[in-house]
Length: 304
Image 1 (cartoon, helix red, strand yellow):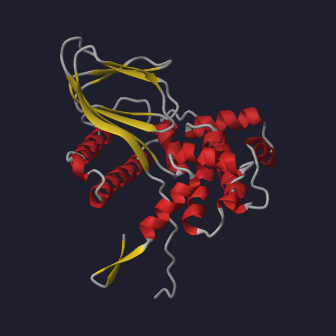
Image 2 (image 1 turned 90 degrees about the vertical axis):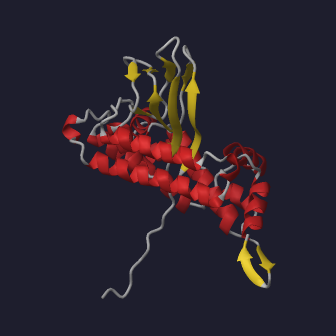
Image 3 (image 1 turned 180 degrees about the vertical axis):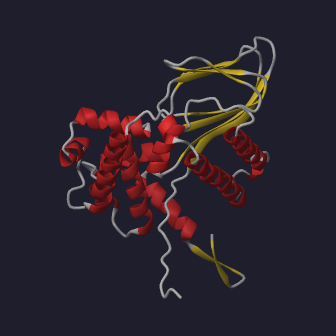
C-alpha cells in the first residue's frame, strides 16, 4: 500500500464567452473577425458558408461542425438568400498549452460532417449547454455554471482522446517537431520568469529569446504558429493569472503585487488589470474578500 499519494495541482483557466443558439434570416452575414480563442460552430438547420482568409469557402450543412483557430480571420453567412438558418456557437479557451497546440495542429479550420465523432460530440455538448442556459434567471446560478463548465471540460477531454487517434504523419501539421519543441521551450521560459523570478519581474520577449538563443522574429513566428496567439498575449495572460492569485491568496499590498508582476508603477498595473478583468485591483480584492467572508445563519457558519 502506498503511504503517500499526491494530488496534482490543477488550474484549468477555463474561459468561454459569446455562446448562443441563433436563428437568422436569409442573406444573413457576419463581418470579418478574429479572436484570440477557439470558436466552435455547429449548424442545426439550413446551410452556412464560412470563409477563412486564404482558404476555399466551407459549406456547412445540418449537423456539420467547425472549430476556428485563434487569430484566424473569418466570415460567416447564410448560404440561402431566402431560407432561415439556425446555428450554435461557443468561444472558449483553457490553460493547457500542449492540448492547445495539438488542437491547432490537428483539428482547426476543417469541416467535420454530421456523421463524424467530432461533429456529433460538438452538437451534443453545445445542445446541452444551450439547455442549461435556457432559463435566463438561472444562468448565474452556481449549479448551472458548474454544469456548463463540466460539459465543456468533458468535451475537451473527448477532443484530446480523438486527437490521440489521429495519424500525425498524415495530419498535415502546420509546424514541425522542432518548432513544437521551440514553442514548448518558450512557454516554459515565460512561465518560469513570471512565477519564479520575483527579483527581476520586468522582462520582455527579447529576454526570453536571448535565454533560448533564438532571434525575436523566429521566436514570435514559431510561437504564433504553434499556439495561435502572440507571445505578448501569452505573457500578459500569465501575469494576469499571477496577479489574480496574489490578490486572492496573499497578504501583499497592491503596490507590491504591481512590482511582482513587472508593472512599471501602480497606475499602469491598475489600468492593465482593469483591462484584463473589468475591475480595478482594489475592486477585485474586495469582491474576493466578500465572497469568502463567513456569516452566521441560525448559529451555523457557512461561506457566502
